[in-house]
Length: 83
Image (cartoon, rainbow, N blue to C red; front, top):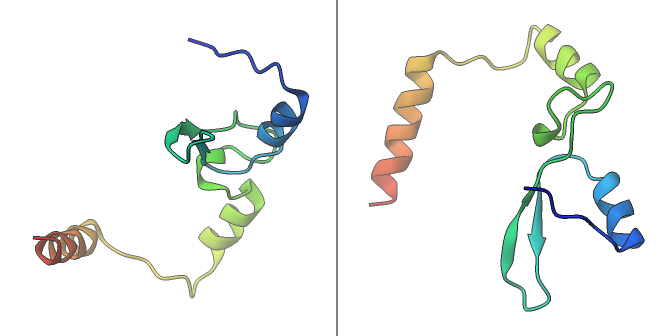
């Protein structure tokens, strides 16, 4: 379902959004999330990173890399801390 935006100022803010934005009502409650449509040069707007930045990060030999097992082990650690 689409929700038409009539307010031009709000439409401009949403149109320039980069990455996931939380929509908050006048009462301060979170209404939902806005994820902009992909644009040229930004295949994954939900990450707020341009394609160029992503390519640079992937090409960086010094960037940290983690195996699936390392990620899962860290998630298990976090899960234990929240109990």
